[in-house]
Amino acid sequence: MKSSIARLLCRMLVVCLVGLPLQVNAGMIGTDTVVSAARAAAARDVIASALSRTEVQSQLQAMGLSPQQAKDRVAALTDSEAAKLAGQIQSLPAGANGWAVVLLIAIGVLIWWAVKR
Amino acid sequence: MGGQEIAARRAAPLGAAAATRARARAGFLFVLLAALGALGGCISLPQSEALRASPPTGLPRHVELTQVPFHPQDDFMCGPAALAMVFNAAGVPGTVDSLKPLVYLPGRKGSLQAEMLGATRRSGLVAYTPKPELEAVLREVADGTPAVVLLNLAFSWFPVWHYAVIVGYDLDSQQVIVRSAQRPRDEWSFSFLEYFWRESDYWSMLALPPGKVPATARAEDYGAAVAALERTGHAAAARASYRALLARWPDDLVGLIGLGNTDYALGDLAGAEKAFRRASEAQPGSAVALNNLAEVLAQRGRLEEAERAAQAAVALGGPTRGEAEKTLAEIRARRASSR
Image: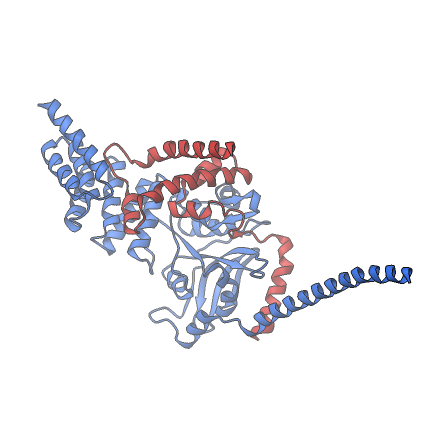
């Protein structure tokens, strides 16, 4: 219970920190704002996105990236991509195809031939 | 009698265990049969069937982008390898080793789709995901852009994901030309591709050089793709792409605001003013256009005009009203201090 409150607090702090650079410059409004308006995304999505960005960043670190790598990678994602990744990094498709898989491919190909020819 | 009873009691649980095992075996068989039935009976490959029935119009019969180089992949490295191929085709250097830190995720022994797009942006290219249709991919290839596709090589319940690059096609033989894994040139029939492709919901991506609009692009999607590139700090590449967007859709708001913002980021205040003015004329309801116009005018020292634009932005209200009020307050403060 205590740790979940601490986590919430941490997250809110991070939102404040992450939320600030959303401004392009004093007075200028970024292009992203127009894009999300065109896509009917509400302002709360921006907050949700800031949350998911911190979540994705820590998950990427847990998966073997350095803090700087994780930060740079999250920065290259759009809000909706970050939101989709958050909590799903384990389950979303990750293109890999190692050598051990060649056998499986062969099985797949065989089935395909059996079915289609 | 007592002994028999005990034996019977012992036998009962043993029999139950055997029955459970038998049920489990039957269940496994049933699942296996169902899986085979699903594979054998109900696979539908609608896209390749539609392409066979009515070939797409306005496309060359045969295209092969021989200029797309081949990068063979090591274990688990199909993401970096696929990116290296399409990056090189777009004029950006890259190898499996140089791109691995941008996209490979050790904990998953693979590369995520979102990160394929992110790595493309970090390399200064526009990452665009076409409509989930083979015909769209063929049109892009015909337009000179190779496409990365995400395939599931195994089963839906045990997926093995893999990225391959489509570099050509032949409408007469109904085949695509593919660079994949250790094979620099494979010919796959449309239905072979579709069989492995459908479980990614026909996901594909393009890596476009600055200023190149995809053949099948929608204004909204391309604008969002360029804005995502702008966000990673590649202002010059994004500006060239916004210009190309506006050449096709002259009144597009994202294109006009993006052009103004990238002009501004690159220090071209005159260009930014022109773009925001154009935006506020083409889209009179845009408070963002007026707010940013006000800011640029203020920085160019035209405070009176700037105040009028900021006032108009505040009057329009909307979700950016707070920023517009701040801009107006700053301009008024500057005017007061300059008097």
